[in-house]
Length: 91
Image: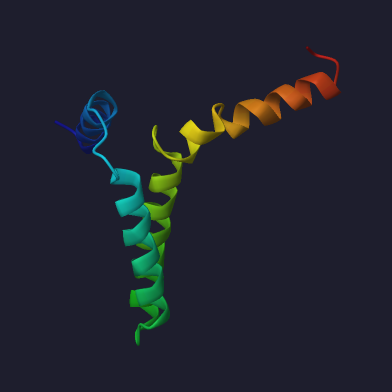
């Protein structure tokens, strides 16, 4: 089984399971904590890796199916594409 298949299988499982209460808040907190830890790191390489992980967790918290996407009601990319289509007279 290739790495790609493993990742796709894990993503399919993640999409099919119900969210735990407070899951996105916990992930956002972990991401913020990692960003703070990155600012205090002595190693520049370690700070970059820690900040990247923190940013990824914050992105996951905001973009998951029960994160900010749910609050917005419609994906922002869809809204932008619709506005562009209307502007250019394609819709």
